[in-house]
Structure formats: structure tokens, C-alpha cells
Image (cartoon, rainbow, N blue to C red; front, side, top):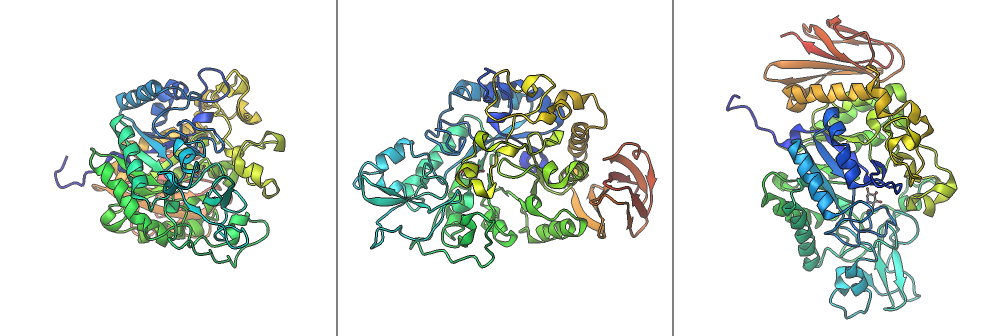
Amino acid sequence: MNENEPQYLWWQEGIIYQVYPRSYQDSNNDGVGDIQGIIHRLDYLQWLGVTIIWLSPVYPSPMKDFGYDISGYTDIHPLFGTLADFDTLVTELHTREMKLVIDLVPNHTSDEHPWFTESRSSRDDPRRDWYIWRDAGPNGEPPNNWLSVFGGSAWEWDENTQQYYYHAFLTAQPDLNFRNPDVVEAMKDIMRFWLDRGVDGFRVDVMWHMIKDELLRDNPPNPAYQEHMVTYDSLLPVFSTDQPEVHSIVHEMRKVLDAYNERMMIGEIYLPLDKLVTYYGIDNRGAHLPFNFLLLHVQWDALSIAALVAAYEAALPPGAWPNWVLGNHDQSRIRSRVGSEQARIAAMLLLTLRGTPTIYYGDELGMRDVSIPLEEIQDPQGLNMPEKDVSRDPARTPMQWDTSEHSGFTTATPWLRTDRAYMRDNVATQLEDEDSILRLYNRLATLRQNEPALKTGSYKSVAVNRNGLAYIREANGTRFLIALNFSHRPCRLQLHGQLEGEIILATAPGLEGTAIDNTLYLGGDDGIIVRLAN
Ligand code: NOJ
């Protein structure tokens, strides 16, 4: 290795895969996935080519928000296993040279967390100020107009102590008061607990919510609000989120990580690009990867995607490392957003862009959103606002492993129904099919891991028109051209310069091995990776 070549860290070179533990693999047949189940599937994950597992919460929790309501930060919910199981998971991952990133939910606890039980016990309790308590207005109304993301007011009246407490999400998820330094210290201790156990990083839940306006000023109305939107969107959350003080808290958390060797922090942040990139922090001393959710809501066409990639690349602060996300447990699945053919293009895009990719479990099989009857809905967001049709359950259904009953996820009744399409869309069946989306993901991931140009090389857009997009990734003189047709119709892309090469990977069979030159002809839904001759 040339000494002048830049060195990259595991979270820059790697591929993240999100495991939603309830739905991955049940090992004790109670219908809910668990840690032993995940351990059982590590060989699969290693084969797939992902290197970093992000595990959604496995902490003790009343499960009102499926683990995002934590009642104990330093233990494991018996549904998922034990701390010993967790330690085994860490060891097994590290043996495979894989990494573990766990969810950290600092913004709020469960109302069953002992901190909150103490806090609500009396106004004089030492923990009172750990949460956000305020008097009612003159007519008994809440302290301000803030709304809960899950519907209704964000303030809940406590009869016993005659004050309101603030909750950005469920009433069962009271927000902690990050203006209290003891809360910050407690969260830092929790981080150390898990870092000492060997976790490699955290995905920090709702990072941009962590601190609120000191004066609790009313949020202004959203002029773009429309009836079909959730009520939360009727106001602009300018005083309840993304406060300037959040960055010093993120920096405090970063300092905890920096005291260890090569640990990292991802921030869950839904904000416009210019605000998102501020979470890298001054001199990149904030979050290592503020999650980039641009692909989740983009209009799926070449011009929009080209513009979005250009805007993101341009907005990154110097030295900040990019990342891309195609799906997560709060969003509609990629295949349901763009269709089966374009899901393959999306895979090629995700795994050839510059920056750490995140794959949501099951997207590698083309799992789709599953229709869940009203009476089976589990998600509080769906239950609280049934008329808005915003349940997140459809994207959280059991992983589809094989053709056995309940897709090999469990032998009991699964906590959420399995897609009836599992007979076709499952790991075992797709492994047998060279042209399956699973095999495509595997080949893309493997190629990326083996080629520095794709893993960490530069990015340059070289052609775009209304149907397609082409770009070049380059490192150490090795160049790859990626051309993607975002339409179902044929697409011609005119390149400039003297480009020649051979297609080494394609979304559709029959293209590999073909030579290309400056004029690219792509069939509908075709994506190609070309190794360019120098
Ligand atoms: C973001 C998580 O991704 C989501 O699932 C959860 O409901 C909220 N934060 C509240 O914790």
C-alpha cells in the first residue's frame, strides 16, 4: 500500500444492514424475532456482503413503540434474549470482522422507566427536572401549541402533580430534559456501558429533537399543510426541533466515542439538506454520519436523482463522509415505492454511489410493503391516526427465509403477518436463481468491497437526460462507469471523451461481457457497471 494513499475507516468502507429484531428470525418460537435468531443468520449476512449491522432497539421496553420506548437502557428485553446473548452477538460479529451499531434513544424514555416514575412522583423529586414539566395555561390549556408526531397535543396532563409533561411521540414516551446536565451525563454513561461491551457505534434516534426552545415558544403554522397530511405537519417545528444547542450535546456524545478506538455515531435526522449537514459538527466533530434520507422521498426519475446527488455532494462540508439510505422501519419499502424492476436499479445506485450505503433488511429480496388489515395493526402511528393510513407495519413484516410456513421466520404465529408472496420472494429460492435481486445485491456488495474505486473512490457525473444517468467512480487509476436507466423505456446516453470498456455487472441478464464506447444504449430498467479501459 502506498503511504500517501488515504486511509479509510470501517464505517467509511463498509455496508450497513439494518436488522429490525422483532422481524428477523425467531429462535424460541414465540412469534417474535430475537438475538439468537440473528446470530443464527450471521453466515447469511456475511455471504450477502454487508459488514455493519445496525440493530434496532432490544432494550427492556413496554413495547408501546416496539422498543423505541425504553424502560431500561443497560439491559436486554427477555423477548430478545439476555446480555449474554448480546455479548455472543458482538463476539460472533467481530469474529467475522463485522461491526455492530446499536440504536440509542436519548430523546425520550418509556413512562415506565424508573427515572420517569420518580420524576412524576412529586414536584420536589430530584428527578423532576429530568423531564420537561410545565404549568397549565390560565384556562388549564397546555403550555404551548406543540404537537405530537403520533397525533394530538404533545403535552400530557399529570393529575397527581398538576402539571403537563412534554412528549414528542407517544404519551408513553416522555421527552428527557437535555438542558439538565445530569441527563447528558447519564446518557454518556449509557454509551460507555455499551462501548465497554464492545459495540462499534450508535444510531442515535431523532437526534434533531434532543433539545427544545428554552422559552417553549409556539410553533408557527405550516402554510403548505393539507388535509391528508398528519396533524403534526400543520405546524412548522421550528421551536421544538433542530435548536442550535443540539450541536453541543452531539459534540459531548462524540467526545465519549473519541475516548475509544474507532467508534462511531449515526444521527437519525429528517431535515432539509442545508440543516442536515450541520450535524457533521464544526470540523466534523459531530455525528460521523448524519443519515442522508434524500432517496426516501425523491421523485424517482433520472433528472431528480441526478440533481439530488449533485446537491448532496455539493453540500457536504470538507472532509465529511457521505452516506445513502434506501429504506428503514419507518418508511415504505423501496420495491413498493418504485416497483420491482426499478428496485434493481435502486440497488445498483445505492451500492455504487460515493458514501456508506444502508440496506434495510429484506430489501435485498425485494420484499414489499404488506397489506395489514385494520384489526391486525400494531404500529401506534397507524392506530392513533387510522384515517390517515400511516401505519409503518407494512414495512416491518417477517423476513422471508424459505418456503416453509411463515417463511421460515417462526413456527408460531408471527407478531405481524408474513407477505403471501414469500413463496417466491425468499432467500432459499432466490439463492437458486442466478438472476434474482438477492444475487444482484450480493454481487454488487462483493464488487464494491473488492474495488477501492467503488468503495471509497471519487464520484463524477458524466451524463444525464430525462431517462438515465451515468457517473464515474475512480481510485488509483481504476475507473468504473455506472449507467442507470430510471425509466421503463430504452435510453441513450451520450458520453464525452474517449471511453471504452466492458460491462462487468448488469441488472439484467445477457449484458455482461459486452463492450461499450461513448454512446450507451440501455434497455428499459437496465443498469450497468463498466470497467473502463485506461
Ligand atoms: C424514530 C424511530 O425510527 C421510530 O421508529 C420511532 O417511532 C421514533 N423515533 C420515536 O422513537
